[in-house]
Every structure is written in structure tokens, then in C-alpha cells.
Amino acid sequence: REPYVLEFIYNEQTIILINIHYKCCDGGEERRRIASDLLYEYINTNFQNSKVIVVGDFNDLLIDHNNVFESFLNDNTNYLFTDYSIASGPPQFWSFPGWPSHIDHILITNELFDFVEETQTILIDLSINGGFGAYDYYISDHRPIGIKLLFNP
Image (cartoon, rainbow, N blue to C red; front, side):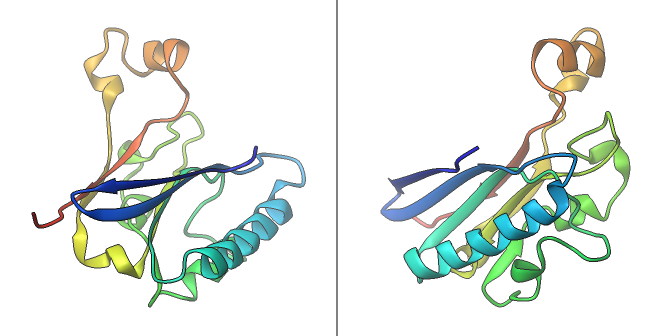
């Protein structure tokens, strides 16, 4: 489950996109904590002062005790989970309704804070015949989380 790192330019803005998929289940909590700490160090070492977006299945909650994301949550001047309001909101908007939980996240660095327009769960399952059951069967057991960034031309 190596992360994918993509550098691209959009509207004259260089952006680093990191797509991750943290380990689930047995023994996963400590492994996810280590992965978060390593990711934190990696971004700080390799992409300091860069516009970084981390997306994916983090397989853990943003809001709980002994949080695996402490490195990022404790450094809120440099990092923000833009989906925090989803995680603290009603379960009908959570990314993993089968559990139910919200374990898919979008993390950004402070270079992007001023560009965030909105973050939301994309409820594709409400537009598919058969609802979430059909979505789960044909597409995924996770709903996508989307972010809208507004860059001035």
C-alpha cells in the first residue's frame, strides 16, 4: 500500500497530491500511527512550503481518544483535515456507511488553507438505482470525499 505522489500544475499553482491507503484491522491502529508519523516527517522534509493535498482511505477516525493523526492534529498551523466537519457531523454524510464511520479524509498543508471553498461527501449512492446496496456492490464500500479549491486566475 505504497502512497502515490503526483506533482501537477493547475492555474499556475504547483500542487503535490499524495494518495494513501492505510492498513486496516488487526494491529492496524499502531501501524496507522506509525504511518501518520512517517507521512508527517515525509511532507515536512520533502515538501516544506509546498501546496500538499493528501487524500485516501486513512482507515481511522479523526475524532477519538489516542488518535493516530496526532502529528497532524497537533500541528494545526501547518495542517488541516478539511473533512473534520463531516467527521463531527451526522452519520448520513460519513464516507463508510457500512460500519458506519468516517475514515476517508482530505488533509492539506497551510499553503492551501486560503483556497478551500468546500469539502463534502459525494453521495453518488443516492443517484443510483438500488441506493447504497448497488453502489457498494458495483463501485465501492466507501463514498468519495471531494474538495473544491478556488484559485484566482
